[in-house]
Every structure is written in C-alpha cells, then in structure tokens.
Length: 219
Image (tube, rainbow, N blue to C red; front, top):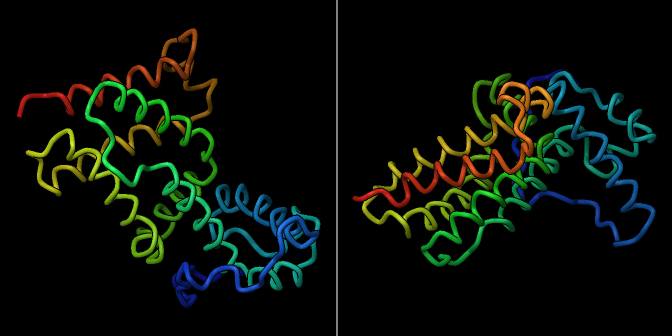
C-alpha cells in the first residue's frame, strides 16, 4: 500500500469501471461510499500515505470489497481523478461563447463555484505534485489536455493575438491563483483579506476584474 504511485502500471481512462454496477443498486451505493471515503483521505495523506485499510474502514467495507470494485488502491485513486476531470470537462463549453462581459462574469463565478465544490479533489492533485514532483501521466495525457484545449479556445476568442504558449501561461496563472484561494480555510482566508462582508462575492469580483484587465487589453 505504500509503494510510489509511479511503480504501478498506468491505467488509461478507458480501463476504468471494470466491474459494471447497475444504477440504483446496493452495489452502486457501496461503490459511491468507497469513493466518498477515499477522496478526503487521499487529499489529506496522499497516495502513499493512504492505505486500503484506512479507506475500507472509513467506508465501512472490507478490503476485499474495495478490491472487487476498483482492483485495489491504484484503480480507486485513478477513478477519483477521473471523476474530477469528467466534471471539469462538463463545466467547460465545447463551443466558443460570445465575446463579452457576460462571458467573463460567467467564467469568474462558475470557476470559483467549481473550485469550492471540488476543494478536496484540488488538494489531492496538488498533494500528488508536491509528493511526486509531477502529475501522474494519466492526468496529463487523458485529462488535462482536453480541458486546456477548451479553455484555450475560449481565451483566444478574446485574445486572438496571443500565441498558444502565451494563452496557456495565462490560463495556468489564473487557475493557480483561484485554486490557492479555494484550498484555504474560509475563516482564515476571510481574516487575511480583511474580513469582507461576503467572501465569495469579494473573490468573484476580484477574479472578474483580473480577467477583464487582460482579456480586454489592447493588443
């Protein structure tokens, strides 16, 4: 259970869910319970620091049940990541939206809501990079690139003068800023920001202004 993640064979996203589980069944509930238990443990302790016994105990199942649904800890870990990027892909439009203030407002508010809702997933991804020094290959090859391509499409509709590299540098910079806010304890973040009346409104407003200063700047 404590081997380095990269000592495991990489599983592709197409390899997931090898055990079919009908919707609305006890099996689906068990599977979801294991996923729900695994996420905060992976986020808090990392892949190497989280054992299958810890996850099984938190989910109130035995280790054999975990292995049945996910083929072990590696399969469970990849499934947790898969769900994050699946939801992220559903959040990012597949078509170029209108170029205007309403799109910037939507980007700011929706991105912050997504980060808040997926705080534990974000902590998991960041912890993996800190522990291992890089993303797992499946994240880069199967998940990150489709998301980056869609975001690049949106930003370049505002700034067609930007190169792909310039656009992606801006994307990573803004994402890291927003993620940094999201993983903070809300009370501490509010204190460090001087106690705004509405923390969410303050963050979204700042992020919206930040986007506008670059996306509407003269080429």
